[in-house]
Length: 248
Image (cartoon, rainbow, N blue to C red; front, side):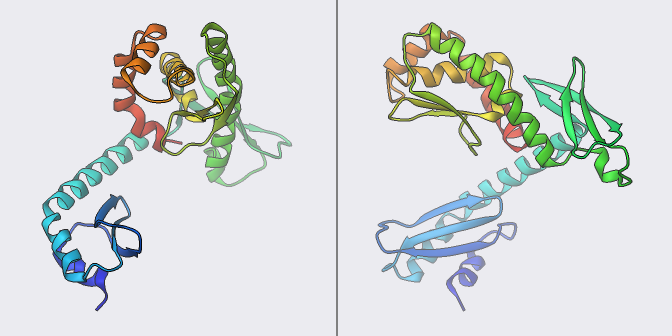
């Protein structure tokens, strides 16, 4: 029997699939838990019995994390269902209203004051087209993000005494933004979903890294000098980041 099958006997019943990998230069046994599986990595020379003991000793922690992940997944699923037929823009949800257009070849989304209009080919018979697909939504968000994030970024860059090397709009999976050693700042397109205050906080946060390339006390003092509402922004991000990164 392979190591993963043997280890599954010491895991909680609700735990996701487990995978064991051996790494030549790793010195300790590590466990990473994701929604779709558990990864156990161990030094190549460590006997399996020791790996099994390590996992067994961590079983309560594994069970707790698995339960938390499942609750988080269920919560996100409910939020997604409640948000069906809407798009999140600048911290508010706008309804998506389908509108058939003659001779239209490619569906698109157009923002109006109170709603987002989803234009789709009138000749299409499939009911699936009454909702925009993920590619259409992604293109809509990215176009807005390029325009609005760029405008906000350079407005703050002109105001602050730091000179960025450039700006890119990226599809970062977990980060809101980043600052490279060359001074290039990257912003996540998902900031278009956030209120302007949160967008501004992330921009100022990254601009301040041009002076302090760390998260030292001096860095946070600089951020607060230009954005006093740091605590409120961080609290909003903690509360809303899951749905923003999982919602499209």
